[in-house]
Length: 259
Picture (cartoon, one colour):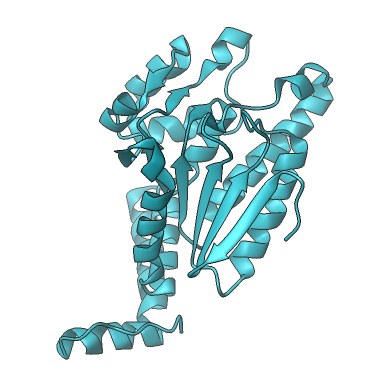
């Protein structure tokens, strides 16, 4: 896996993806294309059970989109970049494996949108957050207006989007934007610990939970229950289900094979 702006290490069934454009790790078309390609590889890799996304250095997770590129784009060019970003964010959101954002610093604009498409968000106590787009005369274009309100509620989302103010990790935790806040030097290790626990779970069960939750969030309750039923059936048909139930009866730790 050779990329210009990404680093990827795989250890103990966990892929650690680092966006490497220091010091602020801004997103541009090249980064989006690389993320899309890498995520496809990791999704298909049977050795990878969990993905962690983080930023290089200590200053930023991702401090937004690359404004230098955006300023020089025509309207048509900007719409093309926006389409690429939206597609890649949706790809990350719906990859068949759990994805954890290890937020080591600034998560602004597109960087916060990237964090929102991850299943879990572990934040440094020094991290800062904002959707500052309104101050630039634009709005979030990578799904921020839609995903944010689904996580924090419409009222809080409007406050953050309308004013564009920066806020700290404690507020991010209070509004349930992030799942856990830890000291700066413990962010990646905490993400690895969460990933390690997830890697021990039966793969198909996790996949079906993610499918049921993500897909069900966008339909009515009856349709969601139908989706859940289909996912339940798929999980029940696995060898891991048999092993899990047998291990429970025998009072031992299950040994899952991903089958």
